Length: 206
Length: 314
Image 1: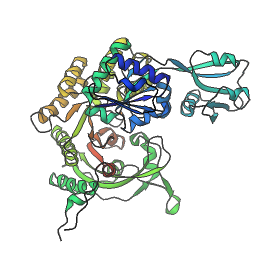
Image 2: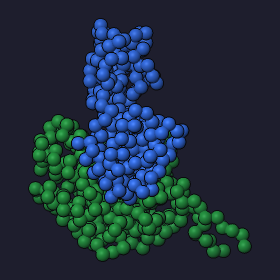
Image 3: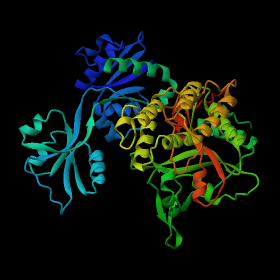
Image 4: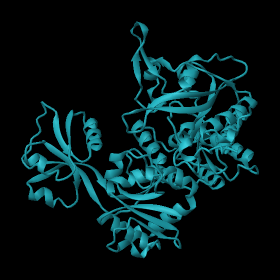
């Protein structure tokens, strides 16, 4: 039995559709229930629905053998896991954005509001710029509008939210999409089963 | 009074059994101090793989550190003769932070080191001892082997000489990430194809060896494969033949590790519990032209997964 951690919400639904196409179905998973664990002994899988930011943790600690997580969350967590496949869903970009008329003051550190402090620090370290990080948990776009920060480091999908708030992308840090990850120890003991899932997913994601 | 060892906590039980195993194979117990001068760890930071060292001011103002690692202390302090290799084993506490964490933990470690002049027989003997150590903990284990010489040789043969590209390729191999190889700068399409094949290949030993042979084009990779083949030959037909894997995601620092390296897992523990390999590079950095190989086991991880058997009163 291979246990799979899926993120609750839109990305989880898309990932489940891919797994369903590959033959790993659990009929009640898409129902509007409050259940968190779903099992199909026949196809040999068990699904857990968890908060998107927790998927990498469940996999790293071996509570789930494999999981689906955005590259943004994976890099931010720094989880020591295998990254087996780019599922090509949940595509967006990790960007530096600011007010349309923003001009960087190079005489002082940049104030960055973000949900991704590790990614922001790593990016600005690579540009040799000192920053002050303000960690936020939502509505990141508000920070520069209220002059709380100079810029934001956040994921941008279509750019509509930015445009509607008169913000724009100044730098693209890296492209983001959902990745299939695996616990390193589980992979050692369930390599055949996990490799079969990867093979089937490759067929439906190509 | 006889002590029933089966009622001891798993780490103590394992220590007693491994102590016998190591001593039977000619390894002597090496007991050391809990601290070292901080400068030792500053110099070999990459070998530690962590920047967090617990420091304090010693007598006379010298900056001292609680040991984050045992191997460095042994390399620095052990008396190494030029004739027979020094064969030592230890059980020590080391002090490190968990990856990404800020709190220091005391880690209960046991391991062995062999330093001196030795040949391929000793390499195979140490791999055998690592497998026996895992079997002592649990019959259901996996011993995953790799070879730093093969991976560095393959990168050289592929013309990957830029240090940034090398680091990126090692990171991708370590996470079995074949899909991002093509986007690494300084890696040709043909080289990317080879690296991706290595990253996504099966770890079943003979299949992985076959794949590695098909990718090899030079002397360094060939010689690494000869060594791996010798190990497979020695293990084939024994009770460990189903437990060994050839897994090129097992990697370590290229400046220190040069030959066979390995990791061990037992089914009940979802973490790495044994790691080791050949580190002649570290000795070379200290100015000693000697061979060195060893491994360490995290005994502290065992107790949570193997509950203690409670002795019932008669």
